[in-house]
Length: 169
Image (cartoon, rainbow, N blue to C red; front, side, top):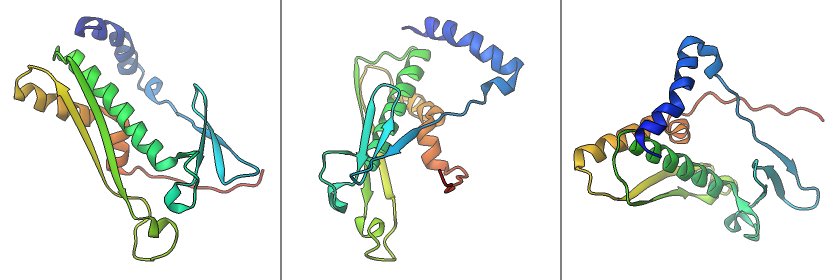
């Protein structure tokens, strides 16, 4: 896909959102079923059933997906798609690219071993390696716009208001 094709694809969507801003608000959903026999949760991904469980550092077998890995994978996926869309829109040629994310966790926090240990990632590093001849100023713009428009990155960075509820089935 080139910049013109991307603009043509997105133009009517952008016009609809400008004309009726309410149509741009969409609620995404995720759902999982608790495993009755194991410490695991079966998550419907839209493509397949993903089974998330404990990370080996907290007693898991490593056979199930770790939710921390899934968070980083979602970041990589979103950032990669965003980078590619921005590069296409700006006509920045990319021969290839690799997106990677790594995050630091102190499992003492999640296991309640040390009250001063944080629960969750203390740092996340997102890296783009691109094979391109584009000048540095274009790459700087590409990174700036990728950060700006990547939904998962912005969500992690800005920490939206989150509500947690427990209800009886």
